[in-house]
Structures are given as structure tokens and as C-alpha cells.
Image 1 (cartoon, one colour):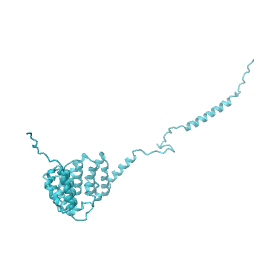
Image 2: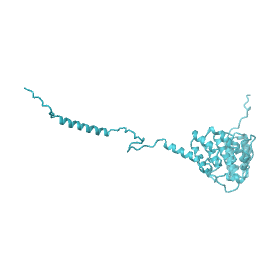
Image 3: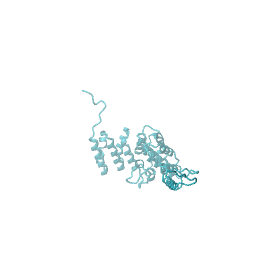
Image 4: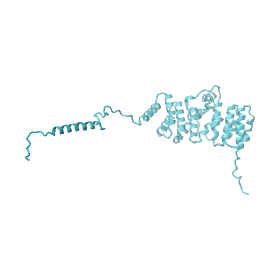
Length: 312
């Protein structure tokens, strides 16, 4: 069979079909590429492509929070500086917060220094005890009291000296911790201004700072001395035991009751004979407190003398 030669210039009958298939495949390939995720090139201005919303950085809220605190600590308003300083107490173990509180402890306004002293105690700033000890020399009694309380939270017994003076009106043998300005604690009006509304207690104990300091209704120092008596409960100095025994005979019944509560916590049975008279106190609250205190102490073992365990 004789083969027919192909004429030059003629298009094979399958070529149009192949072209159609290729065009179809080309369209399909383009569509597939359009549907696949692709990293669009960044625009010259560095902006994200249109339609791609940028998500906020996870650190953004933290950065904003610190910005608010820093601005508050530098605010012209002493009230705002104090509020920001007090809030630092919520950041235990944070070096920047501790440093900021120490700086606020040098503020010219006493309410800011007070807030800083409270914050350092709240955050348990062990590296700030020296600054708090220096604050015991502050000219403002409220700052001294807050610093003393924070020192006790940090297990620094120097804070007890302040409460001893508040209760007794006298300094201990070791001097130099408290300036003469603390003598204003003997002023009844000044002492009354340090008190709180009934049920709240005493400013450093409540730990809520300068904002809720109230002027007590009556002009005396009983609420402050009663609070100081309770604070001396864990003071290891034997002088505090004698001061508390003396306070059980105070003219104010709340001071007497507070002293008895503190004596009960000291767990020293040898004090029972010295406070027995309180069982006949004219105030029933004092009598009940004395009864519970003595009952508790009487159940404790007597303290052994150093040489009482000699062998026969």
C-alpha cells in the first residue's frame, strides 16, 4: 500500500484539539495557583498586603500596662503618684517595680512615701530593707508606721521599736531608729488622725494605704495604741512583755483587751500572775479576753530553766 505524503503547510487534524487541551490546562493551573496560599511580596512601604489584618503583639498589653504605671509615677499630681506607687505592691519579685517603689520612697510628698512603704512590704521586697529602715527616720509618722509594718513583713525586728514607742511613749535602749518628729505620736490629735473607721483597724495592718485614713470621732490615741499592742505580740524582745503587762492596766479598755490578746499570742505562762487582776476588770470584754488568755497560758508547759535538768 502506497503511503500518501503529507502536504507541506497543512495542520494535523488533532492539533486544534491539543491546543484546546493545553489552553484548558493552562487556565486550570492558573486557577489552582490562585487558590493556593502564597506569600505576597512586601510592599515598598513595608505595609501588609491589602486584605491581611495585622494581629496585635502578645506583649502589647504588658507594654501598655507598664506605660500607665510609669506615667502615673511621674505624674504632677501627688495623689496619682501615690496611687501608682501603691499599685506596685501587686508585682512581687519584679525588679523594676521594686526599684520604682524605692524611688517613690524619696518623693517630696508624704502620701507618696507612705504608699511606697506599704508597696515594698506587700511585694516582700527583701532587697529594700535598708531603704525601709531609713524611712523610720521620716518626718511624717504615717510613713514611719508603714515602714515599720513593712519591715516586720520582711522579718526585720527593727520595726517593733516603733510600735513599742507608740504603746509606751518611750524609746527602747537602742536609739537612732526614730527621729524626734515621731514625738508627734504623743499628740492626741495627731494620733487620732492616724486612726481608721471602726472595723478597719490600723493603716499599716490593713495594708491598703493612704486612701482610707480617717479621722476618728473622739480625740484620743486609744485606737493607735491598741493596734500597736497587737503588733507587739511576736516581738522577741522581753521588754515588750513588760510593756504589754503594763498596758493591761491602761485607762482605755480597748488597749487593755488588745494587750491581753497579744500576751496570749506570746505564749509565756510566766505572765499569768502579772495579768490575773484583769479577771476582775469592769469591762466584760476585757474580763472575757483575760479569762481566755489565762486559760490558754495555764495549759502551756512552764519554761524550763537552763540548769533545771541536772542528773541525780
